[in-house]
Each structure stands twice: as C-alpha cells, then as structure tokens.
Length: 265
Image (cartoon, rainbow, N blue to C red; front, side, top):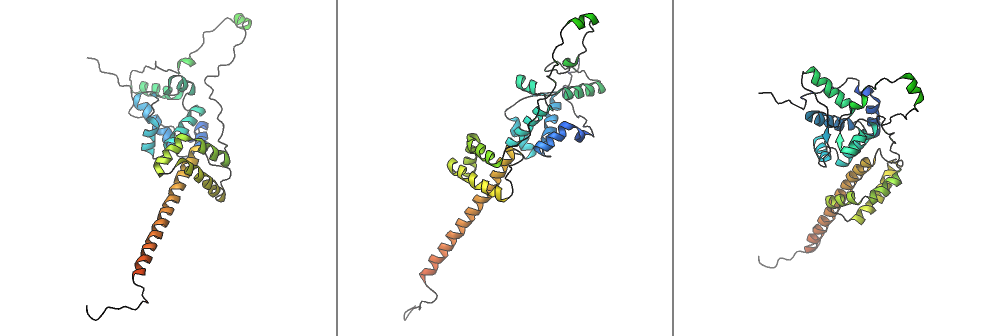
C-alpha cells in the first residue's frame, strides 16, 4: 500500500542574510522590528500546510494571541508584506491566498532534498517563469514589442505620512474601532471622541506633532493612554469618597466637643 504523501514541512531554513533583504528592511522601517515576529509566524503556518494558506478572518486573532500584538497591528503588517511583495498581492486579491514565488521555490527545493513528491499546482507562481519558445529572428523583428509584464513587480509602497491632526480625524471616524473601545472602557462614543482631543494635546506635549509610525500604533497609544487616565480618575474618585466618609465620621463627635457621659454608665 502506497504511503500518503505529506504536504507540510517539519522545518524550513531561514537565510542568515535575511536582514539584508531590502523588503525585510523596509518592513522593519515601516512597521518596526516586531513585525518580523508576525512575518515569521505566517511563514510557519504556510510551510506547516505546504506552500500557501488561505485567508481566514480568524488569522489576525490567532497571530495576535500568539505574538501579543493587537489585531489591528497584525493586519497592518500583513498589508505591508503584500505591498512590499513578501506575499503575492495579485494572488491575494484574486484568490485570498498568502504565498509568494520565493516561498514556493523554497518549498520545492526542500521537498527535493528530502526526496519527497513535490507538486505545486494550486496557485502556482513558478509557471510564470517558464522559458519562452525561441522564435525566428525575422519574425521577432516584424512583430511589435509587447509591454513588459509588470505582475512580478510589487506595487510601490507609500510610507506612512499622516500628521497628528489627520490621525485624530481618522480615529474619530472609525466607528468599528470606537465601538470596541466603548465596550472595553465603558464609555460613550462621544466621550471617546472628546478624549481623542485631550489625547492630541498630550501628544503635542510629548513632542509627537508629526504623528505615529502607523495608524495601528496611534490606536494602541490612545488605548494605553486612556486606560491610564481612567485608572487615575477612578483612584481620585475613590480617595474623595474615602475622605468624605472620614469627615462624616468625624462630625459625629468632634475632638474639641466636651464629652458628657452622665452620672452613670
């Protein structure tokens, strides 16, 4: 009986010059060093299943749970990886699949080294590199030149450039995110929008007039700032209540008031 061929890998190599790759360097510049953790986790999930994974709405949550980063930040990293060409954006937009030509080449090479059957048929990006049939020189000169195929060229990534004021306006308009904060902090949306104005003042005082590294970074900063503000407010209210109770107890019998106990006890 033939053995069932295993599709996923048990390991995959990581080049020692990975941080010399221009795409990786841009990923770190645009999303910070922690983005590498998310990219490596996605690679592990891809090679565990073969050479691609299909997009799942739960994927950002899974990555967030395993790395400790916010889901919004995970999504920003994935979008950046697609824009930089670390994953094929054309294939993702068309089929909802995360993979790349480099991933498929590496998967094929490992299977050959392990003497395993390697079939890259679904979502193959390797077929695009098949050699062209040689043509007659005269025939080639008579035919008009075709435009260069731009499918393998990743779209140019635009660096994040929002100012602080633009960030605040976008955060105020993000109804889905505000709904999540409303539940998390037990605050009405209008009060959250007012808090964003206070947050802007605090950012200016901290020297962040030019904004954050990304919109996800701004959301994470505001969430942390609001948690601290609410905690301090709660502590202040508790101290005021405690002070009021102590004053009321003191009014029952003032220390300077003469004490009359009567003739008997």
